[in-house]
Every structure is written in structure tokens, then in C-alpha cells.
Length: 189
Image 1 (cartoon, rainbow, N blue to C red):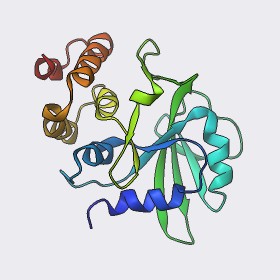
Image 2: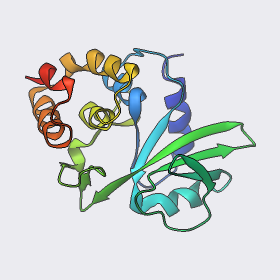
Image 3: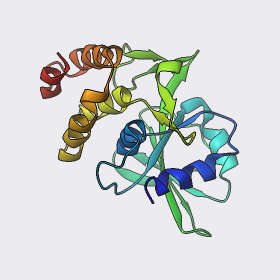
Image 4: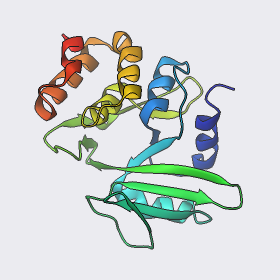
């Protein structure tokens, strides 16, 4: 079934009383309301300030933090930048997930790679018709400009014509600031 992985995360997170949002390629597919390519994993984003609440909520899960490409056990310490990625595993259900910590303060998201790039929280995410929260595609695409892979180009091609003028303008300005020679700028004119 389409979006099975998203539904599983939605089921896991349904009782979490903080914001969370499907990220990456799955977020783009939720925005388009169709699966556009094969996905090898699923990740979701939360506010950095909610990390300990998440760990308490998912207390049956074991988490590793990623630092310089290495997985290390996450105990109960509060994680600051540069750590922004967690990998969780539930041995009872044989489930895995990836969590991305985002810089969100005072109803504003800040791009961790350049904190001058911001977005109001209500423009940061949307809900699928099934009620699954996801990052808006312009946010997802911005994360993909630093190390653009073939699947990222595919995501861009799949979604670019579905973005409204506000989304295109925001993404163009953000890419110009963060990666001013990126090839996607030509498609955002």
C-alpha cells in the first residue's frame, strides 16, 4: 500500500504531544499525494527542544546519535549542534526510524546550516489528506542542495511544477544565500 511507512510512523507518533513531521523524499511524496520513487528509509523531524520528550515517549526504543558519521549510544544528554540526527530501533517490533533535530524557536524554523535562512512555523509543514504531518517541499529541497544526489534531482523534477510562487521564491532566495551556484536555480526562475 502506498505510504505504508508514513502510516507506521503516524501510528507510532500519534500520542506524542509535540510537533513532528515526515521529512525527506517521503515528505515530497505526501505533498504530491503519490509515491514518485522507491524510498530506502523514512525520517521525521522534530524541534531540537523536544528531543528528551521524544526519548521519554519512545522509551522502548534504543537510540544512537550520529556524530561525524559515527553512530554512538544516546544516553540522556541534551544534544546540541552539530548533532542533528538520531537512529532509533525497537527490537520488540523490529522497527527502525530516523529522527532529524530541527532548530525551531518562537514559532520560527532556522536552517541549521545557515541560521539567517528562516521560515515561519506555519509555512514549515502541512498535513496530508490522511492527516500525516510533513515538511513542506521547499524545506526538504533546501536540505538537498548541499550534497545533491540523483534521487534529490528526481525529487526536484517531480515537485517543482507543483510549488506555488511563494514556495518557489522562498526556495530560490534560500538557495541563493546558501549555495548560490546550484543548478536548481535555473528551474526556479
